[in-house]
Amino acid sequence: MDTKLTVDIEAISQVAERIKASTRVVVLTGAGISQESGVPTFRGADGLWQSFRAEDLATPEAFQRDPVLVWQWYDWRRSLIKPLEPNPGHYALVELEKRIPGLTLVTQNVDGLHRAAGSRDPIEMHGTIWRVRCLECKNTFENRTVPITILPKCEACDGLLRPDVVWFGESLNEEILHTIYTYLQKAQVVLIVGTSAMVQPAASFGMVAKRTAGAFVVELNRSRTHQSPLFDISIQGNAGELLPRIVDCIGP
Ligand code: APR
Image 1 (cartoon, rainbow, N blue to C red):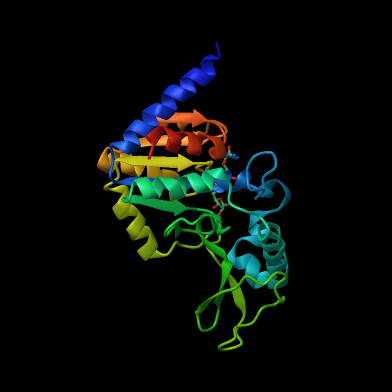
Image 2 (tube, protein in one colour):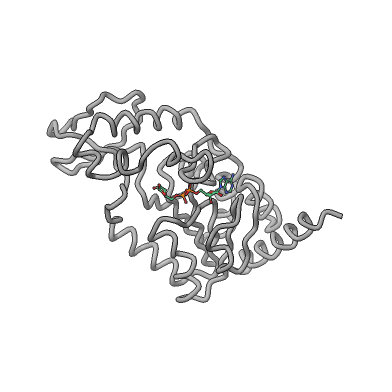
């Protein structure tokens, strides 16, 4: 008998029951959910931060020092992501929000794949790689042009455009953060999918919901993380397999 599979099925049905009995669910996703679509993750053996230095490419200082280099890196990532499609994990979350109208999806990902899958209104807490922001007039514009002209300039004022993402050392949009905490403080279930939980503030969302709302916190990850022991259940596996199984178990 395959004990692991048995344990997983039990855990999956326990998670499904909890979700089914809840009206307020928060899902937090990280790079792991897009891994099966072909988007590289950041940490781990094949992670981007193994081959690139975040401080050279994903900080405001890096952009000030060498905007051409930073834009070349973002242009490479945009060209890599553009042809990719959502995977069964993204689609399962679309199904889940149909069944649980009080579901809030928060993602750290900037790849746009939750929207591409059809998620209603994902909170993209780290911004999106498909939007640019003018350093002068502060306007933001959707931009999906690949390759992008380097250096891209603002159509309104000719100022320098930057990717509208949150870099290391930058604060998150306060309104967005306030909205997320409001949902966490009322959550009955929090699903934490495919994140190494190394970057704040997202890394503490599970515990915030547990402490303030007594939420049942579930981790779905290919590997155990340093936070796995803190959660009610941690299920190891691919998001693209686990999420559809949970949704199937919840039923129509
Ligand atoms: N299914 C489930 N989990 C997976 C899968 C998969 N198919 N593939 C990888 N994982 C897990 C890994 O085990 C790891 O724990 O996803 C996690 C990815 O972790 P990171 O690469 O650190 O990504 P993330 O947690 O989203 O990073 C947070 O760091 O550099 C910044 O701004 C960037 O938003 C990003 C933030």
